Length: 243
Ligand SMILES: C[S@@+](CC[C@H](N)C(=O)[O-])C[C@H]1O[C@@H](n2cnc3c(N)ncnc32)[C@H](O)[C@@H]1O
Image (cartoon, rainbow, N blue to C red; front, top):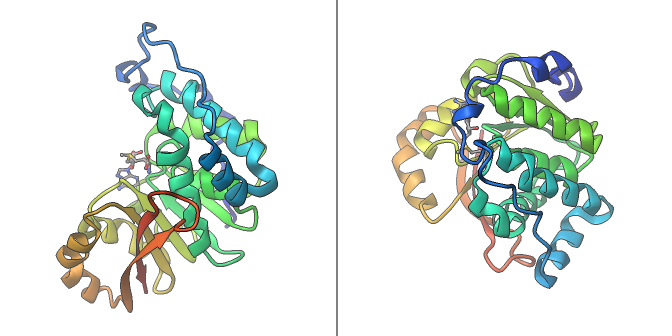
């Protein structure tokens, strides 16, 4: 089934948004800050990664900095570092993904990394897997506004999405430590493909803690890679797990 077929419908937008009232910045007192300007270094990296789709990336960052904050998908303090720490940090992972791959981004939240990859790589067929309704509604609105036709949404936990999608690559950022993440993500690959887990300094330790489980899944490779080395002051650390 293609990503498009998983698009959350207009119904989702009208659905009750139970937890939004508890979100930071939605009580009417915190005005959403304006979208941050790109520094020279960020602009160079963004031009390289997004090419002629840079305007889409800018529009996505505007959504993050406005409705994304108003509706509690991202904290207001993240605004000055939306490009470097979030959007570029995620988008550079595109260099590790084969042409034309079918990809699921598990625990997409505000579309990190899934929407960044959908903007950077129109050749990919992407499904954002996210269980929380208010996040799904926001993601759907952003996809609609940007006119992206290579990405859809599946409202589900990763574990419950097995059998509903057929993918070559699974991505995840800030969803769970690797030892838990493998159970949420590897079954989606149905025996072949790769998990790209965006991680920080704990990558090595997380692999060690997950090693027995990785062996049980018959993992062929678990390696730490750096993405965006040529573009970012701080490249993105990725744990690649190959089945
Ligand atoms: C801390 S947020 C990270 C969001 C985004 N990936 C990022 O880097 O900003 C974790 C997200 O994972 C989702 N999540 C948690 N457990 C999940 C599961 N088992 N399957 C899919 N998504 C899950 C949550 O709803 C939330 O949106």
